[in-house]
Length: 394
Image (cartoon, rainbow, N blue to C red; front, top):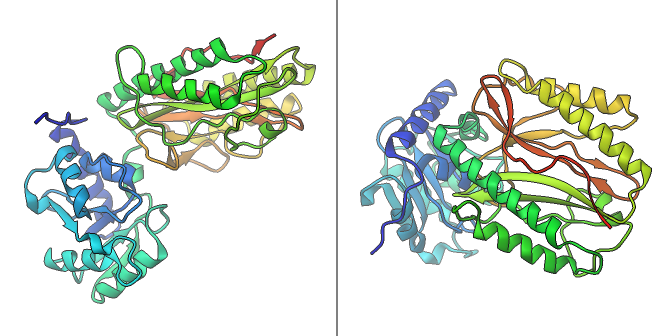
């Protein structure tokens, strides 16, 4: 039987656990139950498409984490987590799955009691895609002597500064998204069905680049054209690309679950002057924002510089213009921590990675020219070399 290749050393996982335990102590938590699959993977290495059922990681102040989930997924845990020993992998019976008569969290409550955690302070990720109101109610009911606190974001914030290996994975993902954009520019033409182009984007992303394979992205490709591109999050259909329309491609390369999103916009035919004006404004604003992306500055410094430059050119963007990225699972490739927007006073540190996302949505289309960046000791490094411009094909 082949051995599943671990993404990181046991020592790196232990460093992550130590950071998380310090954060737990600061919040007075005896234990946390982590249900976000990104956080599960970051703490233990677990990697499987099983987040549609209830699962999670239990972490206390001593010993290894404990993975808990559906029994049939326990073998996947044994293949991917860094922990060894059956006591660190616990599975619940399949009769708990999508059964209105009983909830898996009652099994978790029993396990926590068995671990001596039936009457302690427990942190749970209450504002999380994967932790429902019914799940919380069942867990609280099963542990009447325990006290629960909201630990949403506790692990996420420990992920902000990347290790050398994590940055290596991000660079590989950056190479992959570069190849995806190259394929778009090669193939896109008037009359091509959008779904056929998306199929090529997917194929390129999964094949990978520079000898490294592509993982699945945490968000599907977003590629709206024309009036559809006045909205930020539409995907695709079978309509053909048309002359006189802009299409933005918000896509991500992924490697070992590390996500590197990047957007570019393609205009087929002669470009209207307002798109050229928007392009010039966005490019100037990107330069202004990047000039502030250095250690010691705050996240809001990037947004303030970007927006001030954009406003001088007569354009406005009322949403954030960037966010932290790293390891992620559907439905989001962001880390849900730091944002480039006014009021975010997070101090930038070397090793942080972001999607600098200065998109504009006009009255008849959209313009997205974005950059994944790494904060280094001396300033920002753009992880991709994709030409920063509005793409045009006749």
